[in-house]
Amino acid sequence: MGDFEPINYKRGFLQLIILSLLSQKDMYGYQLVQETAKQSAGKYITQEGSLYPILYKLLEGGFITSYEQYATSRLRHIYYHLEEKGFLYLEFLQKQFDEVIQGIRLILKEDIQENE
Image 1 (cartoon, rainbow, N blue to C red):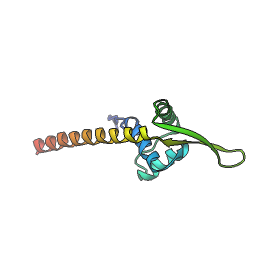
Image 2: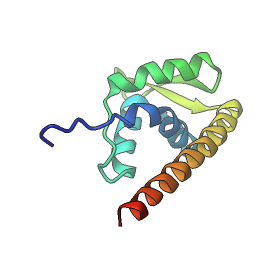
Image 3: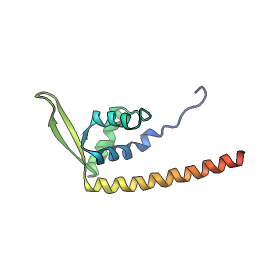
Image 4: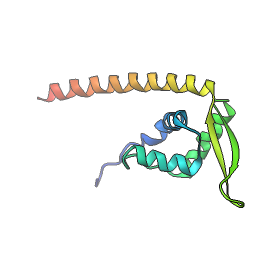
């Protein structure tokens, strides 16, 4: 990109993405990372290190809960589950996201028309 530095949209949307994925099924951290990449066709890649602070914040807020499950006799996963409060928060964030995207599209469309 040379002199251009991309804006980091990913971090701002990660809470919305986590809640959306957990609305589909309970998942553990690494699984959330994998599903994010898979469902975005590789366009949205995140690391577990970025994920956990958001998971902890969602836990503290009562939007999600966690439980432990053993994958093998030695390997355990901490699964995250979306609670009713989390579904309501997801709905709120989706509406907010839609409004922001709609506004940005209107601005960009107007800007494109002015440049023609």
